[in-house]
Image (cartoon, rainbow, N blue to C red; front, side):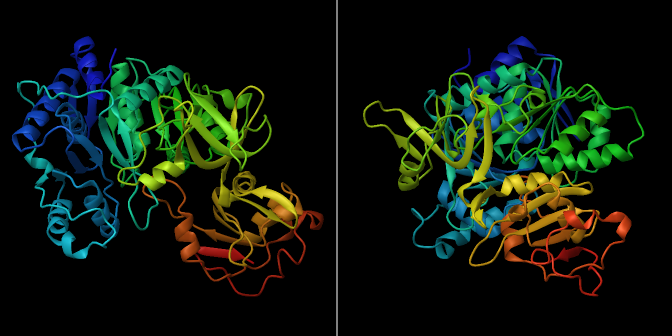
Length: 545
């Protein structure tokens, strides 16, 4: 059984040498070819001075060379550092300085950008960074070697050695990388596989960035099953239905925003549904309208919502179609792990009570790279037992059967008019309103009341009126802004920071006709929705305040 991440590829190549391993727009590799490409990359890295423990940074899109470089770096004993192509220069500069790579590989203009950063960082970086970076070489992806008969690099790698540095999204100042040892990554890959049961005959479509651990682990899960991975560009998804049909995709990992797009594409696609048998989802709440839409558009497909955090990869997986019996749950703890719900003093709470979600098990990672204080805060070690408990910062509750229900971050939980509520609860109710495609609630802050943003096909006043039928009055936001689409982070989550940073001026559309509005008894009071002014709505942002 594999103890190291790159052992997964060696085992698959031995068991299924002629099976297709990975496919992109330019072609496909069998497991034998991927195995040889990884060996070639490992030898290439060693020839350029990369030694065990060195960091290899990759700023590449979703394509076969990324997969070969990933396994090649691991075989060379290096620590692989995937960086998103959407990361801006400000953040990239700090990631490069923090990781101190011995070598970097990029593509196109990004190659020049990384070379420039390597030259300029010493004079640009703030004093608090650990030390000045060197001038590590930067190569274009076109310089990677062709798959050949290179001898396997025999670097000494132990299960507790680091395999990955995964930089988490959302940081606007100092970078924060989760240290991922081989042992933890191999364990969690097996624990997820036990729940999802990828099959050797599966074709897995990955349209999630490899820099996001959800996308990266599709490589490990697919290779562990000996299945085929189809990788799609992440900057344009218009061709997803063609990929689903052309390659007879059976497993499709999505985030909610991607699922919403797939539903819109499927509605315009006149062909019979492709043979997708499983959708998985993580990264944000998977709402009922989207789940129901996937089941309708892809008959026979099962849905498996999940919950995780980079600090332990995956926490819970709901068994496929488990939402039918446990709506809104994200599942039970992975086998061999433990999920706790803790009060503010760190004591476990009984089922049904809300507290901070904490995790124990072999999948808990090794902390944050070069951040000992933050590591001690989030990865807390029991001085008596040595057990490490990961405090996620998320809040939720467990039921009597161990199913977890996530309510959001601490900032997502608040009281208004004496009523306790969560942003996720209000967003879920908004998503139940016909015509609302996505929703984001900004909780009260700095003396301002909560504000709802939606991407919808109906005016804001109607959204609030219909929301009032679904929630008690205190939970109905006083302000709603309607946009064509909500901004997303590179990982496909709604970017609430962007919404908060650029709030649009409130503009209320003309009052809708009586036939389209619920009865007066269901509409929020005048204190919640003031009378509509005569201004017409802006085309991209229609608001009610």
